[in-house]
Image (cartoon, protein in one colour):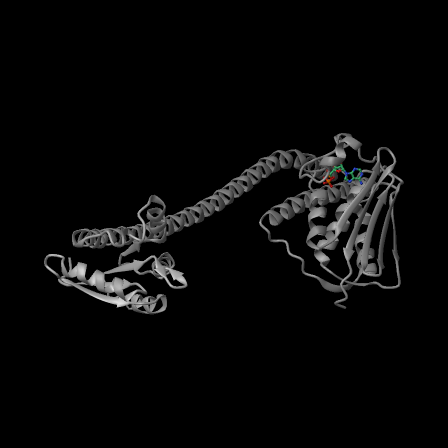
Length: 410
Ligand code: ADP
């Protein structure tokens, strides 16, 4: 208990102040200082100064009542206790007083010094405990808040770690998948290479040994025939090796689009010329270019490879004396390339796998090939930003159409 307890009486009747002061004077020890506020307004101003240890508030305060005053003061955060002075003692008044925030109530005219002293002491102690509880509560709330924040941060860190782990997992999975694909590619390469190399190599061997046997001038024609066979076998081997090389360079991401400006018509005509030596007996390539424009801005290397692959297939999968129709065109902003043959065609059931590396249709088992060309063509076209379509009818022929964007970097 403080040495001197300062009490503020809020009451609009001075007589009540005098009575209260007299009662207080009779409290043994007399360590009380009673001050008086006669109105609601004056009272609230003094209360805000927080100079008193306890407030005695009359229920009746002119236009206001004591409960209003207590409520307002408590709402403003005043921690010192309030004791309501009422004219009657009943449960309803008691409850109202408590709800408004009063610690206790005393019935006017009935309380003696002992009652007053006891009520003041209890109220002060009670208010102290309340303040202590509130302090603890605030501290607890603060700790809960801190802990919640720590937990949220920990969760965030965990989520971040989880995301990193997942990313790493996907990358490892991708790398493994790639490794697996490469491994498959390598083992398929070994199988195909040993199989595909055998035929041209044995042709080279047998033709070479036959050439040594044809010694006379009359054998010239036969010798030339075998030289031709050797050439075509070597050409075959070169093609196979080039395909393998292209695939592995593609796998390593080493193929890039390096466009340059060139005349599409004369470029295609040169490729057609190159192909002449490798056509079957009586086969011809019918090439034409459509459109007044001839210059394009494309990757020559990729274009050459695409053309050679499609024209070789046209020839390989057509019979002797057949024509392979080759057309290039530039219309508006589209460059088109079309290779059409009247060959064996592609069975419908094989069409879905056509661009898978090493895939070969069931009707080509006795024709040499690796099943890599179309995969390369498709990828090269994609690298150049174009599209590849085809139509094929078994026994009637096949048409491959490539469209490429025309870029006016000319
Ligand atoms: P390859 O010709 O070495 O077998 P490609 O990748 O060039 O490999 O072709 C894959 C498969 O597509 C061929 O094996 C063949 O079955 C089919 N194909 C491609 N072009 C034609 C064509 N012009 N006519 C018929 N079938 C074709």
